[in-house]
Image (cartoon, rainbow, N blue to C red):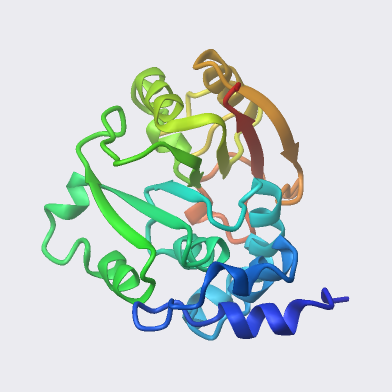
Length: 250
């Protein structure tokens, strides 16, 4: 059953282009956060190829679990094609902000930033920030949430400690570090650059070592049928994923 405030929230929240974000914050005060998340997921602005992945990625449930709030400032690490960038931008609303943190290796490729720049042009609250390594992130303010999906294993294929320390630094006290990735139970970090997976307990250990507290984890994306011995891109089914929400102490 859809929330009763869905229609009003959807009508208020769907337009988010630079020419259509003039609604005052008061316009968003009538419905709960779930309404805004749902409106972002069903937005006609999302491309069909993104929508086709919703059944397996469960964006409505994932964004709700992450703790995203209206007006939040988010730093998204390696947004890729912008699957979550679009949803997060609309969910936080015009009074919120999404910094799309793109690696310099992408920026140095011809057209490497075209897709994310197009999203930033469409959503007036998205700003592309090129970083030369995620252990040195320059932003004009601390953020409410750092978000990474299906990328932590790549970060952990190098020295992850400085990266997690930088995430801790750019988060405000009480802020959230959200991690979703492909699981490799029982093998630690040995498959990060080969199978592109990581052991969930290894992630917890690494992130907690940076000063975070694990606040919650979810099995909503778990798939016991995944053999875990092939790369997710080579597995014909849906990969087994873990979801964790960490909190920076106040």
